[in-house]
Image 1 (cartoon, rainbow, N blue to C red):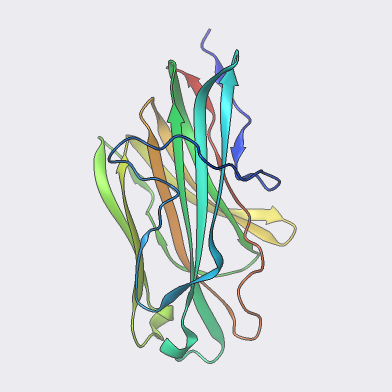
Image 2 (image 1 turned 90 degrees about the vertical axis):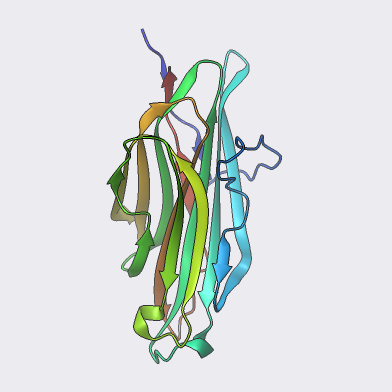
Length: 220
């Protein structure tokens, strides 16, 4: 019988920050590295938070996951919306398996305030027919109010079979924004999920943005 493991949540709401995990394969995105940012975007707070976890079987590590969240604010002086300010939430994740184990599903999740608008997002839902290198770029224009546009982008390698996007009520005043990859591979995986958001000018950006990656694995 093929074994499957579920449970570890990289960046779970009560997760522990873990540093120094093994890096991804050459050519694959490293969740910890900054995306390329252009235009009037500046980091919010620390700018980046990263968390990680692992699966062990009989004392051996068979999978590791990392997820990082980058938060940016669009300079209010560079847009003319008198009611709302704008920003970007950008998540990056890795899943690495070894020892005859494969990832077959990876969720990259960000929890946003209930009702917060998502004005633009990357990547789109799609079928992936073969391994390919891509660059995902999010263009940010403050809903047409920007005097100068901004962008966030990152390159990575995708593996077949599909990407899906979803948003749903998560309770406690939060909505879950989820990117899901489905397939089956022992290759090192990398993902991004980015979106332009806005908030009332007099409220400021959210104080906390929970995030996590979930990655059940199976014997290959």
